[in-house]
Every structure is written in C-alpha cells, then in structure tokens.
Image (tube, one colour):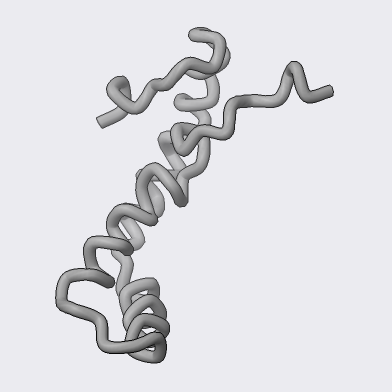
Length: 81
C-alpha cells in the first residue's frame, strides 16, 4: 500500500546519511584519473572506513525511524547532527 510507505529519504538510510558522505570525501580527496582509478579508490576507501563511524550510523538508525514516525515523515536531518 503506497500511501503508508516512508518517504524516499536519506534520513532513514544509514549508508546515505553517514557512510556515503565519509566515503565520498575520501574518494574525491585527490583528482581521479579514469574509471579504474575510481574503482580502486572506492574499494580502498571502503576498506579503510572507520568502524566507529559505521557503528554510530547503525546506533542512530532506530531513533531516526522513531522520530520520523512522530513527525509524520518530514525531514529530520537537522535533529541528528
């Protein structure tokens, strides 16, 4: 039933709201030279992500979902910085 599905929001996806931002910063720290360089850099940066960052994103997931339910699905990014 589409009327009860949550918004397509990065606020409820731990990879979007935390992990991807950190990965993106590391990947694009220096200019990329070609597709293979990009692939290698993504793999290397992914492997070196700080586990504490991932754990924090996971720990915030349930509180974010509860908050979204309370405020009927509006954006909550400003509440979890």
